[in-house]
Picture 1 (cartoon, one colour):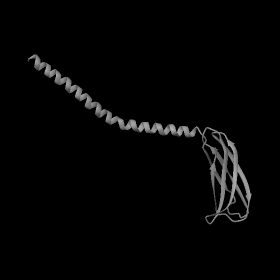
Picture 2 (cartoon, one colour):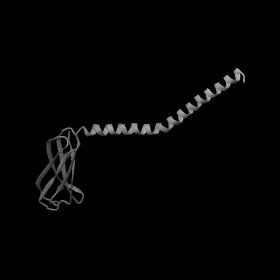
Picture 3 (cartoon, one colour):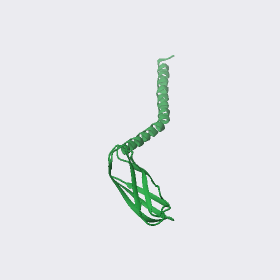
Picture 4 (tube, helix red, strand yellow):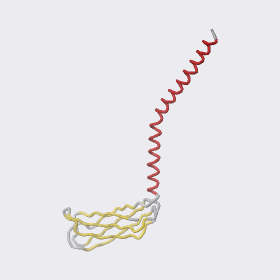
Length: 141
């Protein structure tokens, strides 16, 4: 075999290895790129959730013990700060309804609630009119 043929075969083998490696890398890259993108998206979402939880997040579970009573209404329940930061100026707006129409409103204020804390509340209100539903909203800073 001549030297030229040996160099050609050697060149062909090297070229095949390089092309095969490049194609293999391209296939591997394509195969793993989607899961990597998914992990990056999940990481971003988890960081956002962590940031949100490091702030304050207030929720409540309230009920009117005497909803059908036309005079006295007793609001009882728990206010919870799920975040780690203190929530300030918590305002709970409670509205009573009869046949879908709002007819009475009260404001409950809580000056502050530490992070990861809860507070039981109980308030009584006397007003005329029969209620068949009540709803509440919460704001805080």
